[in-house]
Amino acid sequence: MILVKDLSNIDLNKKTFLQFGAQWCGPCRAMTSYIEEHVEKDYPNIDFVKIDIEDCDKSLLEDLKVMSVPAVFVYEGGTTTKSFVGFNKEKIINAIKQD
Image (cartoon, rainbow, N blue to C red):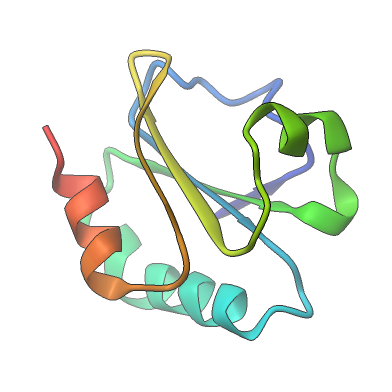
């Protein structure tokens, strides 16, 4: 999982799993661990990106309407194809597999 502060160097035309979280957030840490240990290796064609809400441009949070963490946005072709809030293994897999 790549940790970034903004999306300036991320190609959102490629399938991208974008997770907003925070170090103080238990479910965020659990989601990151789950993705790194169980998901990334099975989906090598997807970029897994994490943004810490405490260390990013707050206008990005406003633009995407991030109100709670963990918040997930899946991008493909430059647009959001799926989004959800909370750590849920089934939602992670469904968001990745969505065509």
